[in-house]
Length: 501
Image: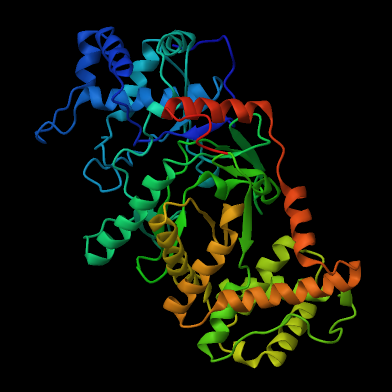
């Protein structure tokens, strides 16, 4: 039944997690209390009608729902949970380790009828399915009061119980979204799973947070090309460090990047404030990795600023802006299937540039760098992602072996400031093993060239002093809420206050 004490904000929502679980005795007691409060008829709704060797334990499904709702409530009492009613739950799927059945929707409805949950029904948009909205639920005052009586931390809830970390995706021709595919395990998938599980296990023992964040989440506004803008709520806490490798187009040779950690959803400026184990971090970016890989495949090593064409190509694009335009257009072109798609994608972000000017810019770039002529605008990006994901895997494996935390964000890495040199060494080792060339050394050389240019301009000839000053300036401030979260986590882990710096 609807609790009218506080209106539900449908935009302030997160998706129901079918892998939530807790074996805490206080939580088991809560589950039993709610189950016994149901009528015999309502309890039967939770009971399985299958003969699947007891896999569908009704209390297990109830516990998953309560565990996920509890984490949302602990994070923000007003946070809603999105539950799809499209019968997409496949109990025997590798992507549904707790065997959550389609009947899970009925369990939510029972909790709604018993006044444990508030609800806003979703609906299907016939004219534009993208505008369809799923049903939202939120604990009522009754369930919130029960949550308030149990003395457990959100850390006591495992949001990734037996969750698959090697994902293979594909998309049907007429489908709006990609779907997770079923697949048979091989030596390759077992090996990749072992690596990702080892990394996730390591990161469970390290604290990652944003020191300037007062609330443990960020809200980002999304402005789609078509349709209304909307906001997305991203949690920032120790329950959202779980990482997976995701492959695309039904192939183990396409994509494969490491995805999932909350740091990948942070705005770029906020990544400067990431702290690991209470200490400062540094981010090293390899944004030119894909062009470097393409050139290496042609036997060319890129040196210097290859985006500098040496002259102004179009009057409509000022010389001071030209390098930036060339770089953005080329990086888009790596992922585009053809030139038209590249120009269209560029226009989505920069509407004031004419297509004719972009064509001249791209032609001039290819004339200067002819080894890119047969790879630009030929859908190379997703293949290159597989190569860079293997480099990332190599680097992460080195850090896991040394028991050192590391965060990956596509073409960059975040490590403790003290591990800056270790990361560069790991990158060199990975590149030599994966592609046969020390790309890290090339990147470091280009960075040095850029620094020399900066030093001549600003008369800062002492590089070590300059870097020390920059590091000091970049050391993030710490808000009181961050300190409290960190101390709570250390208390929960049973760690001495001096264990982390």
